[in-house]
Each structure stands twice: as C-alpha cells, then as structure tokens.
Image (cartoon, rainbow, N blue to C red; front, side, top):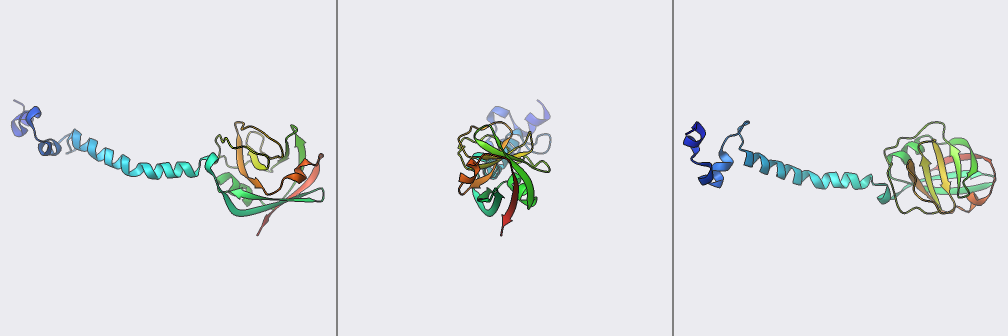
Amino acid sequence: MSKRQSQFGDAATMSVSETLSAPGAHGFSPLRRSILGAILVTATMPWLAFAQQKNDPASQEPTDMKIRMMFNGQSLTAMLYDNPSARDFASMLPLELTIENYAGNEKIAYLPRKLTEDASGPFGNEAPGDLCYFSPWGNLAMFYAGYSYSGGLIRLGRFDDFEPLLVRGTFPLTIERIV
C-alpha cells in the first residue's frame, strides 16, 4: 500500500470529510480545490457581467452631458451617452470643424485626433438622430436618415432634433459643451 492509502484508507471508501482534507500538491485535495474554485467563479461572475453590460454599446444610456453644434445659422443639441468614447469626445470641446454631406443619410466632420475605441462594438438599434464616431476615418457621423451598423462605428449620443442636418452643403461647424 502507498503511504497515502495507508494513512487515509482506500480512496473509494473515503468519506467526504476525509476526501476534502486529503492533502494535494498545495495542501488541498483536488475536490477541495474544485469547490473553492467554483465558489470564487460564482462570486465574481455577477461583477463581470455588470461591467460587461455597462460597456455594451446596445445598452448604453444618455447622460446629463449635452453639446451644441452650430452651422449655417442652425443649432442642434445632443445628449452624450455614458461611454469612454463620448467622454473622450467631450474632453476635446470646444471645436471648430467643417461639416459636409456624406452618403445621402449623414453629415460628417473630421476630428483633430482619433478618439478612444473603448466603447466599440455592434449595436442593433440604429436610428436617425444618432451621433456616432467612425473610428477608421476619425470622423463624426451625424445621421439624419436610416443606416445600419458598420464595423468601427461607435455611438456617442443622440440629437434632440436632427432637422438642421437635412440642409445640404459644406459649412463651418462649432461644437461646444452646454453647461
């Protein structure tokens, strides 16, 4: 008989308490390590799920952070979402840019630098009035008509009224934070 069998008896006849107390490589039996691991995973899973849901682009909520965009004598306001990309955008304000038409359903304006992409990921509730960032080109995308999610598109917020975006042309654009 091995030393372990002589000390603890045949493994098939060991009680649960004997199995839990049988030392393994680190002083814990394999069963005890499995149970402790399961407890640890069970305890941390809700926190991981909460953190992941908060960063899920489809479940992001508006904040109280508002911005104003002005061009061609028109003014729009937008509520920014609670995500790292929107916060990065807000940190750049005020901005003087150029707004122009693109693809028949949006206006675009190129930012002076790229934003963080921490809020990236697909979302399925696209709608006219969305304020987005297109990371491959580094531009704002302001949608005034229907569109579908495209890789690299990050939603930053939502316009209260997007009617001024319907005016065609290229104009100087001022973007500022509303305090």
